[in-house]
Length: 302
Ligand code: AMP
Ligand code: MG
Image 1: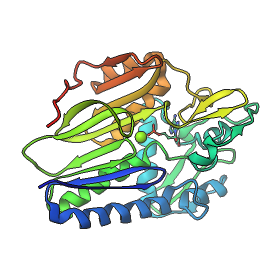
Image 2: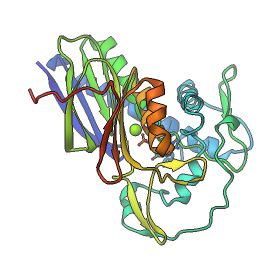
Image 3: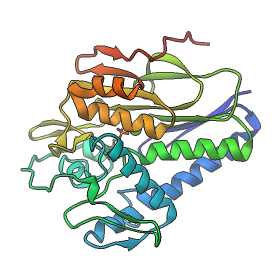
């Protein structure tokens, strides 16, 4: 019988659901351990993370773990696949927009808007040396793997659980979902703009599903409201017509790459998603909904 547990970490909801109830505790332990490891690698809020060390050492390469290399490779692939719409070198820009500490503290204050004097993001400047396991960025850049690390963790946890425990599994980390293992029916998943407010129930048989939204992580600044999705071309919060994007793809990483890119690309998002052949659901600034041809129809609640 299906069993599920939910907790909070990384300022978001984490949920693991397994087909075999007796596997739940071990599955949960796998997710917790992996999240700890990933945080040690790339949590930008942890001064002792490897990502913080790379940022502090900007201008030279430093030794990093293989896991950090894998996470950097994933971020660079996402940047390459989206023509730079998803760019891990937006670290300074996210902070400049006001998101410089945990989201609750950011929401509780009014950030003073400042002129933008930062270098433009440029993911092609990230250096990863696979032979000696080292990485670095030039001075003036800061890495932020917020867009890809959660999805990578969901994919990796789901795969590890299915493999180690022999159960079908659904792992969800703050809007990034990944499924692994075999089961008779598809998972029923609620899609919406924020956790706990479902808009549509769909069947997810395999792969990953990701939702990115500018509607939730918002805060006030002296120049008006800001949010956490940066347009690397301007260095400022994106201003496109879509406020939420949900994408289904082969992995949560691919899905999340496309959902973040869709918000950044704005008017070009529809053409980008159609061209990529991805199933997607977009919600506009005024709540209007657009779906690609491949997006699933509603599934009635079981
Ligand atoms: P997501 O909610 O998965 O779309 O990821 C959003 C997070 O990714 C933000 O909180 C930032 O840490 C980071 N981010 C924001 N804009 C971008 C961008 N254009 N490219 C890469 N990462 C971004
Ligand atoms: Mg995401």
